[in-house]
Image (cartoon, rainbow, N blue to C red):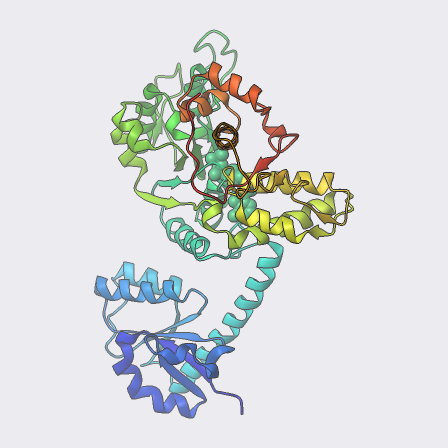
Length: 478
Ligand SMILES: Nc1ncnc2c1ncn2[C@@H]1O[C@H](COP(=O)(O)OP(=O)(O)OP(=O)(O)O)[C@@H](O)[C@H]1O
């Protein structure tokens, strides 16, 4: 016989629910406390649960507990059960907003017990639909409804989606941390897309890519004749983002004098075009990202502490690909399908060897590097299955059981570390040299010695990266 439908309720509400359990059981529903192991038992394994959340009071602690239950089981659709003990929602804006946003409501005093059964069934139907969508989304690569094409099902990515939703619900600045190529800009776009600003513009500015003398005008705009060459009025990127979201990438590269202006804008939401005496009010949300250590930059006097605190109201971290290896197959398959639809290819998929190599590689350039390698392999592959060589990844050519001179080992390690630094720094030689602690000239010499290209487009070709599965490699000073 088929087991009855079931719902989960937070452990702290157990006493209240127990009183009602018999009635609900008669209607074909079984209630299980969130602390109960039965949740994972055979009888409920293939069932989709619904969450039932009695609301007794509006203490912050209770809100936090509810929030935690929802976060622990984001797959569930939750019914909020307003009991005779529930606080009045009117006048309690925080609770009201929270409840309306997260729960389907059942009023015990206004609705009959049959209505709660209907609510549970309705939520079950929504949960089933959600599950179907999630499965399809994982295939299609679209996650969480309007959240942009962010791929990844690992716990760390689920945590990221959860945080994106949380920060999208408010209007404060957000600081997005993460290595290069992890998806910081995509995260910023996702925040914008599900925020109340989604109908406004989204603008991304790479502070590191703008020449210093142009940054002020680019961000704040200028009036005609403000400086030589200002032949007409220019609206800056901040003003052009009115009503929307401005993403300042590589904020660590913003010159100090510009940091003062940005701070002023963040404090009073007013800007001044160069050559204009008046101030203009602008309604723009700022999201910022960097892959440099800003605490270190503050210590070195390169980044203003007050600006850091102003921007750092909410922080989100995007995990590196090597820390979510289970997502590698999903991402590579998705992009292989995409690229093979766009261009003719003989390839039908990845060989077993390629999959294993991709799993072990460190991915210093993260998702961007994975996409680039898959794109190249899809075009270059001459067989039915993409090989590690097509991906520009080859197993370490040396078998460690074989004898190896120390000099050769040093050379191999040196090449690998330099290649990783170049990929991480988008082939900006000066930046990579700084990270490696050598001069630019030295790095050029080493690149020549190891036949490493300085162009990003060639990062996987003709040089092949090896993958590191052995002990950590240290850079040996030349
Ligand atoms: N989870 C993901 N799913 C699908 N595509 C992704 C994901 N993360 C990143 N990408 C893709 O990888 C590329 C790099 O992402 P993005 O530009 O957002 O990274 P970033 O962290 O901002 O990089 P950088 O610091 O170098 O500017 C983009 O093409 C982006 O669409």
